[in-house]
Image 1 (cartoon, helix red, strand yellow):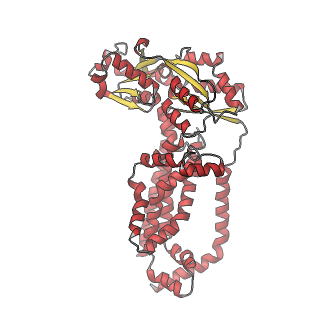
Image 2 (cartoon, one colour):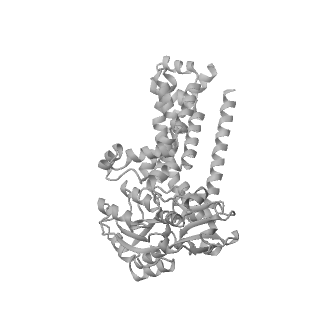
Image 3 (cartoon, chains in turn yellow, red):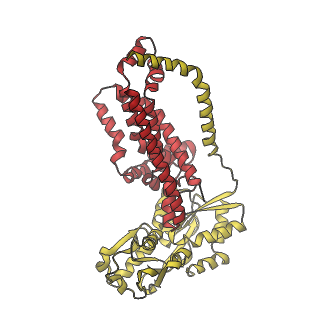
Length: 275
Length: 222
C-alpha cells in the first residue's frame, strides 16, 4: 500500500515538471485540426435540395449540367420520401429547394408560408412493377404475378408518406387484391429503399417509379411493366423555393433551370412525362 | 471516393468525447463518493440511453431542439440557427446517447482508487481539487482511457438519432453510418462496401485496444 502511495506521489511530481508543455502542444494541435474544419474553404454558393427519392438518378444529372453552366454554384442533394421532406422542412431544415413527388406536400407548405413560390408542377411520375430478370418472373403478367406462389414478398413504398406508395396501394385496391396480398407487402421508407429491396433479392416484386427502373443499375438486371395509368390518381410532382432559400440567388437560378428545356430533356430520359 | 462523412464522423466523435470527459469527471466523482439514495435514480437516468430505443430519444430531441422547442428556440436566439439538422445538434444528441458509455467506466474507476490514498493526500494538506487531479485521476487512468475509447467508438456507430434529427446533410450531419444507408438505397454497393469495411476494421481495433487496456489494468493491480 505504502509503495502505491509513494509511486502515486512520485509520479505526480514527475508529471508536474514535464507534462504541461507536451500536453499543451498536443492539445493545441488537435484543436487546430478540428477548428479548421469549421472554416468554410469554398466561397461558391451552396444550394441544398431535398428531392423525392424517385429523382435519385435524374436530378444529379440535371444538377451536374447546372453546375457546369453556373460554376459559381454548388448543389447538394438529399433524397428521401416526400413526406419526410415535408416534415423536415416544417422542423426548420436548411433546404433551399423542395422537389416533392406530389403537389399536395408543396401546396401545404405554401399555405404555411414555408414555401415562398407558387407550387409548380415539373413532371408526372409513372408507376411500374419491377422484377429481377434472373427471378424468372414475367412482370407483364400483372396483376396475377402478385398472386404467384413464387412471389413471397412485394416491396412497396410506405403509403403514409410516399406518393408512389399511395398510388401502388390504390392500384391494389382497384384490382381488388389488396387484402389478398396484404401479408406479402414489405414497406420501404421511400421508393429508393423499396427498389433496393427487390434489387438485393429480399423481395421478388416491387412497385417503383419508372425513373428508377430506367437507371443504369436497375436497367441492367431487371424487367419492368408499366401499371395502367387509369388505376391510380396521376402523380403530379411539384416543387418550390423554401423560406430558407428565399433570398438565395442560386436557389432562384436552379429553380428556373429545372423547368428549362435542358432539364426537361433529362426528366424525359428517365421516363417522366410533362405534367 | 468521398471521405467527408468520415471526417465529419471523427469530428463528431472528438467533440462528443471531449464534452463527455469534461462533464463526466465531476458527475462520476459525485456518484462514486457520495451515498445518497437519490443517486440510484441518477444512475438509472444516466444509463437510460443503453436500453431506450434511439427513435424515442430522437423523437424527444426533435421536439426540444427544433427552432420552436425549449432548447432549440433559446439556441436560435443565441446563434441564429436551429440545432436540428446541424452539427451542433447531433453533438448534443450523441453526448446524451453516449452518457453511460463514458460515466460507467469513470464511476468504477473512481471507486477503484484506494480510499486511504485519497485520505493521505487530504491529510497532507492537498485540496480536494489537487487530490483529484494529482492523485485520483492518475491512479485511474486506464478507466479514463477506457471511457474515452468506448465513447469515441460508440459515437462512430451512431445511427438512429442522427437519422431522426440530422437530415443527412453533407458535411453537416451526414456521418458515415448515414452515408452507408444512403449508398445502399442508391444501390451504390461499392461505396457501401468500402465505408463498411473501414468501419468494421476500425471498430475491431477499438475493441481490441479496450481489451489490451483492461489486461494492463488488471496486471497493474496484481
